[in-house]
Image (cartoon, rainbow, N blue to C red; front, side, top):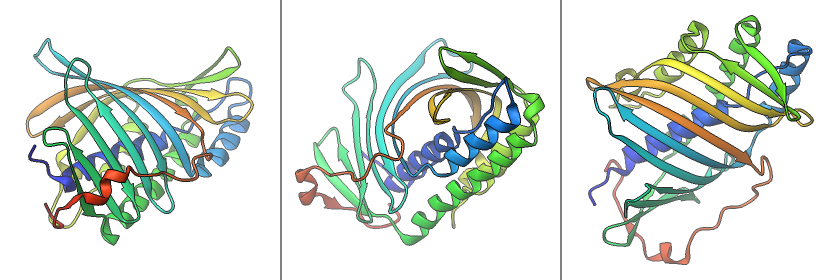
Length: 255
């Protein structure tokens, strides 16, 4: 399998930065009070397990691609475990980030590969997360444009499609995803964003986020639906890597 670890890392970190933003909303009883508590808890999110179900469909095509990502992440120092599977397909991607290296298992050769996570990439990811906090302020300034309900002991926060404030915030986040020699952030356009968060009424921690949006890149338009379940927030203390990674083939930086 020919794989660009640099691009894979970019996409993975982009997904995680977006999903960690998935912790912001408020309540029907007292929106301002609930959002302030929720933002306070969300800004303190340092680790979590996430189970993502992803459905992607291309405009003009009846076919869709479904995949699931089972993951764990620690923000500081950056550690990650990710297992991506596609139903009815033999393809499976195992990825780890640990001690400054990214490890990927090639599903065809069953060979582990590793590549150094540069200080630049590390700082960029931290920058994504820091920049994501901007969305908290955006939401607090647009409480009237969000719907909040209560169901089964949880808050249900919904942001409908074509909410310009969210679209503008996402554009700003994407613009900060450019890297030296690459303008991937500017090549991606996101539209028709709709988000729903299910938030624990007692802890204000996000339990589930449901997001849909259109992505346009290189002349192609893809609709993506993300259903993410969060668990063990701030309880993931360490991520261990498989023993087999000790024999990983090192890939030079930039490939």
